[in-house]
Image (cartoon, rainbow, N blue to C red; front, side, top):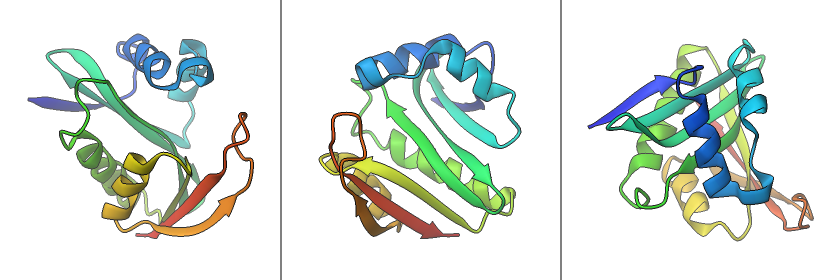
Amino acid sequence: MLNFEKLNFENVAGVALLEKECFGKYAWSQQLLIEEINQENKHYIVVKKDNTVIAYGGFSQVLDEAHIMNIAVKSGYRKQGIAYKLLQKLIDLAKEKNISSMTLEVRESNIPARNLYEKHAFKLAGVRKGYYQDKENACIYWKAL
């Protein structure tokens, strides 16, 4: 069974490990994640199975708009619908906070992530050329809530 909970001091170390696994040298540090916990405009959901962090995602809120920061799923748990459920939880949380739209950037080459967002009715709004540190383009997605 999957458990969904807010990012907190008890699960932040597991999220930091997941960040390293999924994002390598671009991973957020545990210290940065700790700093995110106390910010009123940052909202993160952690997914646990058998008390192990297997996924997490979150968004930053600016007025009535949410910017999805990260969604990550541990290898071995991908392609099981976990990211889909997690993204739905983030959308539901955004609606609870009276957010009217969500946006995000995703690597142009990240087809699984792009498919995930499109399944949730996010629309491609444009491309940012050379957005990432390695100069890969970013696809910008938007969704009205």
